Length: 175
Ligand SMILES: N[C@@H](CCC(=O)N[C@@H](CS)C(=O)NCC(=O)O)C(=O)O
Image (cartoon, rainbow, N blue to C red):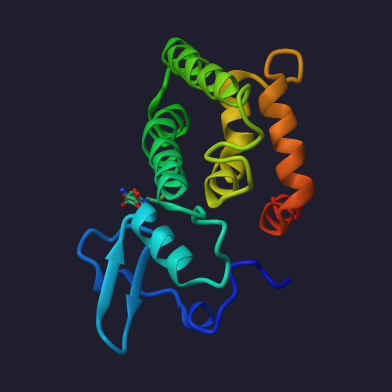
């Protein structure tokens, strides 16, 4: 599949060994020709989006770009933190129930945001949607399912992204 991010620069990207990066965390990016090193998912994503051929994923103007960044940061910090605790830290049913309630609050916020527009950051699909999409099933598992009755905007958003975005389609097919 030809991803909409494709460009000659991006096709040179390769995974690196963690020995180049003292914290040993993923993702990590290294451009060997100029020893340019980057860690932090949001920074790496912004870099790839900035040099890609796709001019809408990153946001079409400054304000849209900041909305994309806002959603990437929110999903990668607030939501990822709850998910990480739920799947890897919580031991008891009580701990899990508290995290599930926290995630429900967050998803109700997202549900409400989607009452004003079709996509998370702007009125067109951006990388914020693609990133959120990748974790959607995990969020659903934490809250005991994302049904159209409880989350009509979110489930409609999921179907729309799945139908219209090639990366989302590919991710779902490989899950
Ligand atoms: N703040 C970093 C977090 C990176 C991170 O924690 N990555 C996880 C995998 S998703 C990891 O490498 N964990 C291994 C470890 O903590 O040793 C980012 O947003 O990229």
